Each structure stands twice: as C-alpha cells, then as structure tokens.
Image 1 (tube, one colour):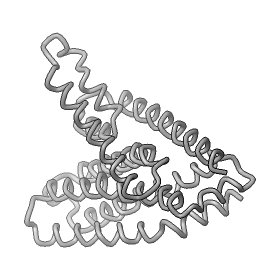
Image 2 (cartoon, rainbow, N blue to C red):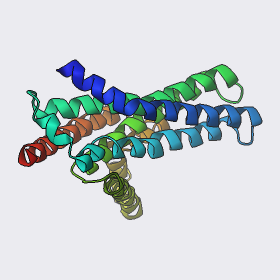
Image 3 (cartoon, rainbow, N blue to C red):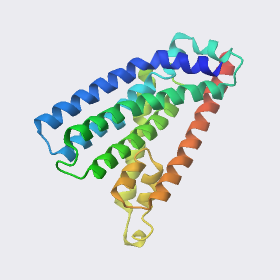
Length: 236
C-alpha cells in the first residue's frame, strides 16, 4: 500500500518536476551564457525562483486538487493511517521541489565552475537554495492542507510566507543595542522558511540553524498530518 501511495503521488506530481527542471535549466543556461548578470547574482535569481516561487506551485497542487475533486475521501478509506498519506505526499513533493535546483546547480557547475567565484561557494549557494525550497514547501503545504481549492491553498501559503517576512522585519526594526549579543532576529529567521539563508551568510552557528530547521519541520509536518487526518475522517 505504501508503494502504491508513492506511485500515485509520483504519477500526479512528476509533470511539475519536469516543468521545474526545464524552467530552471533554461533560465540557468541562458543567464550564464549571456552573462547579463554576474554569476553569483544569476545563481541568486535562480534560487529565488526555485526556492520560493516553485515550491508554492508544488504545495498548491499537493492536497487541494484532491479535496476539490472529492477524491481525498477515497484515500482515507484505504487501510492506512492518514499520516502515511501525508508522508507520501510530502516525500514526493520534496523531491519535486529539490530536483530543479539540483539540476540547475549541476548545470552551473559544469558551465562556469570557478569562473567568478569559487566552486565551493557556488555549490554552497545551491545547497542553501535547496534547503530554503524544502523549508518553504513544508510551511506552504501546511498552510494549504485543509483548503478546498488550489487558489485558496496558494493564497494561504502566500499569507504564511508574508507573515514570516513581516515577523523578521519587525524583529529587525525593534532590535536595539540591548540585544546585540543575543540577536533575536537570527533566532526568528533561523526557525523561519528562510533559515538556511542565515546559515549561508554565517550570521549564526550552523548547528543552531540546522537544529531549528529540523525541529520546525518536524512540528509543521506533524501538524499537517494531524490536520489532514482529522479532516479526512470527518469527511468520510
């Protein structure tokens, strides 16, 4: 049954993976070949598209379409606990989100290597972008797990992302000399979907960011599994 769930999700989501790879690969090849922007800025733009915008598209299409069509009720009629349904969706969705950035990173390494920046830094940028993509996907999926349509799932996901950005901005505004050593902003960002950006910048210890991200992801996915299971049982 577990393999059947994974295969079902793969068949439904794989077109998004191929679309994402084609989009980011084309964007990367054209940008690096024409050299309109420096390599680092080009990589940053690619990461912004693949790490923030593309995960929103994947999250929108993970649960909401089945809820809109009513087929999610059949999933919860299967002899598996609801959390396994959510786990299958999460695993396939995470692979779909990471795939385009991995492909883009490989293309960038083969095309430019250490042309304008070190190879290690280029790989680090794409690793950071992949982490951001997975974190953004986690939060946006949780936001839209009970929404009845893709449009509403997208709006809820965007609202959650904006709320995190506002929380980070407020911390930056009200951070005073009293907190220069504690830097509460770094803790907030470290737990946010953008936490790996702080890790790449070296503002806080890597171990702290990784632990915060793991804890946040575990809590958010657990919350998502609880909510989708509760809703599915009620619907059934």
